[in-house]
Length: 145
Image (tube, rainbow, N blue to C red):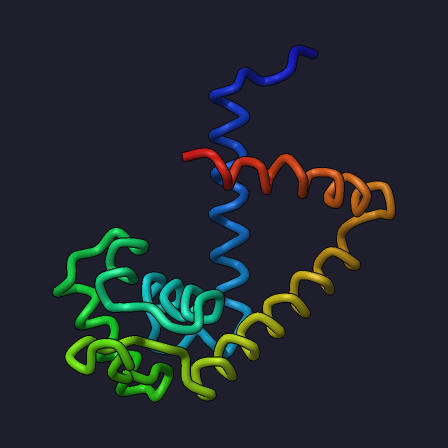
């Protein structure tokens, strides 16, 4: 049996990763009113405690106007804090509120629990070792621009 070509491998990997992400999203109470970009902004703010709206827009590859709408929605939900910078009071920095941190922690926990259970139910010890071994190459894919 010949191994699939690189394009077929890419197609198969993209398909399974996409389907797994959809499955993970469906297994958390965080199914809530947040778009993928809003969730991504929350994750960015968890990694970087204070960012400017323009920095968030650039990282998410959206317009300033779109980011403004995203931040307004997250602010309505109480997930972010807007605060003027010490160096320039006209400039507002964005950080994650306690409610935003709680949302992120709860969502991550629910997804991790579901995935751990799914792995236990469907994967042998050898399969689990294969999954662990695949983490390195998968993480390297994230570094390619």
